[in-house]
Length: 171
Image 1 (tube, rainbow, N blue to C red):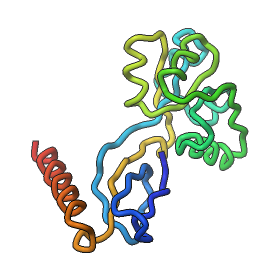
Image 2 (image 1 turned 90 degrees about the vertical axis):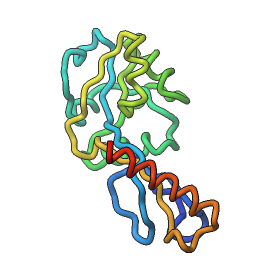
Image 3 (image 1 turned 45 degrees about the horizontal axis):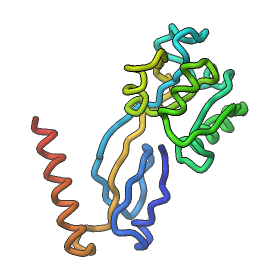
Image 4 (image 1 turned 120 degrees about the horizontal axis):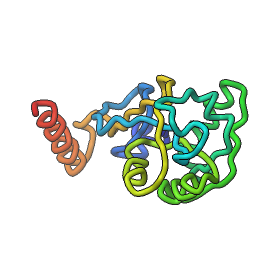
């Protein structure tokens, strides 16, 4: 979320994985998944009954987040700068499960991909609310140069992934 650090377009990588909704010039894409960022808080938190939370309201709280170099932390920082509010970080952790433990103890709130939080929500007393902003829905895609310019192994991998994608669409 979102990371365009792949260099498939400048030929220093054969295949890359990117998250985000922006179009990258010079590469082809195959969608992998779509995920939504959610606001996560303790079940007893003041926002613990809301089904959705806007980003500005989420920024009124102290957050636990992943390390500052993570694409997600960079995205949240950029979005908070755009609305001219500070992103108050109480703690940084290496993984979402550790973040959810802090959140469950009401030590902070967080913003994370729903797919990573759901397993924690099944075993912890945490609450998830959709972020209302359009940018909170993110696509993860495989990116690559024109397949005919790639080595054979990369062409086979892309063909396999394209076939799986077509089968999933037909189902």
